[in-house]
Image (cartoon, rainbow, N blue to C red):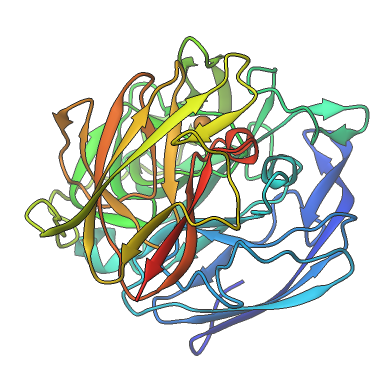
Length: 423
Ligand SMILES: [Cu+2]
């Protein structure tokens, strides 16, 4: 679904439906009856109007992950509860400053986010405009959304209860098992890698080839960098340039990844088959400089906060500064149009991610090591027994919003706080 004349108007029906998935017929929790619902495509400055109908037997709501838009009213307001049988009209007025890149949508009702997202409720949003930073020979290149979702099965349904992070899971790309991605030898394509699952990590690699990162979490980088593999926690996105290798097939895979002593060992798995064939092309030079840099390194810091993640020994209850989520309590306050520096401490033996709504942030350091500022992000891993320092600028939108770990099991079991942005 694509916006036109500045408006994307659509209907999303939430319902439990049977879907065809990995060669099986399974009950799923769906948007518009599909395990992989439509990609929503819009431009900075657009308005999006969604008639959102809940046909589930439990409440739900809608979050547009990573988007700089009002967290209040009928915009990106996760405090809303859309009850069974009700239709709610969401309306989002995106700013002209909205960054081009890849975003996503998913439910955010506290205690139900993991179940509903794991059940199938998540889709992609693309904000067009990366082309303005591409060199002339790489504008309008072939692009592929590579939406990473995983599911577990109980009987003839996708599992939504008692989700175990370490349990065997089936990883899909765009709702398909090991789909084929075609590229010509030497051709440059834009791949939008997005982890839109509930809980697990990916460490994506295409052996023998590099990913050239042009955007992270819907934020164009100021300097393109290359990586052999990219760790993608639940919620994060990486837009990358990939060049077709010599003629033949290769597996796009997720490599083994360990999230810590109290975490999980995720095994290797094939995600897709990349088939390089056809008339070879001369490989284009990769861009280096890309979008203008925004750097909060020299900004005036108006406030400092410490946000500490902990969990119980059983790994079933999760806390921020010793407290579990309460939507009636304001945990942190900031002033609109100021910059703050926050230290996110992970006092546990597993990786947690840090995600905040409404405004993205610059990672200043991890475990005391200064980080290169490629661009702002909205979902970043904090190492076990480690810390991360970030800076964020609170622009345009006052109101109550949230910050949390984006492992949705952890968020549902308490690891979320209310942030109020005051005028
Ligand atoms: Cu966590």
